[in-house]
Image 1 (cartoon, rainbow, N blue to C red):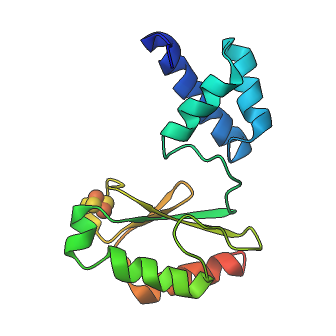
Image 2 (cartoon, rainbow, N blue to C red; image 1 turned 180 degrees about the vertical axis):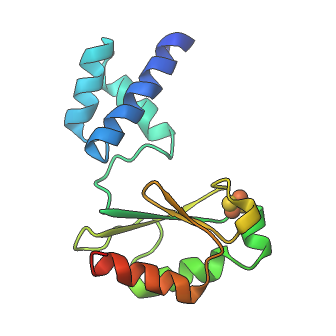
Image 3 (cartoon, rainbow, N blue to C red; image 1 turned 120 degrees about the vertical axis):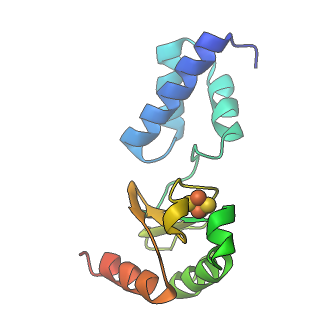
Length: 145
Ligand code: FES
């Protein structure tokens, strides 16, 4: 993609805002960004698909991001937590439950290394997680608390 650095920065910001507004980058959202920045939609989609932070599929109401960074790994976090959530929800990382309630993602450091293991649900950070606290957290979300 031959886009100058300033235009690329604007494009990334616009994609971020569109995703914040719509929850994911649908074809309609991509078209809107394309029109606003006078870019071809193929360029915009290509850029969006390059960055893992941009989602081109609908996301669950609760996006659970499990950190697999080094600090979380060292306290035994990532793998057991991912397996536990996968079993609880019946989905693998990258998938969304059929009811559209939960999406499970595996991410790198979410800047809570001092309180690992950590995970994020939408914009909220959850620290010092245990399998039990995760189970309770998911139960709370399922019950709408
Ligand atoms: S490595 Fe998990 S929060 Fe930093």
